[in-house]
Image 1 (cartoon, rainbow, N blue to C red):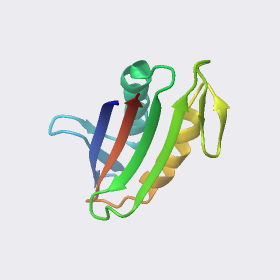
Image 2: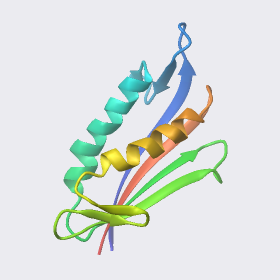
Image 3: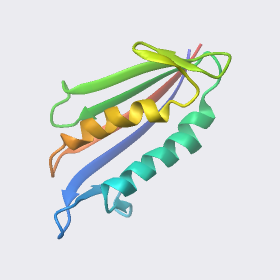
Length: 125
């Protein structure tokens, strides 16, 4: 088995206007929910999706650092025809619209000062 792991850790803070700010690194701060969402889409499309090959499994996991037991996970498999399939997922070529609501719902529960992780694990056999 071969595994590729993509991890994004973010610290959530509040700016002067009361909006969320996502600190990814010391020099990379995303100033809004929309900017963070756009960042996630870019990472998925440029890094995760481009690394996937037919028969790969993709596990997306969301986790709070302060509450490691609070985790949301979804596992999908990329079929030979380019369609993703998984539990509670109708076969689809576009995975991002299916997982984005789950990510957004999870992030909405994150409080200022929390650190959370989004991990995308590709397993190839």
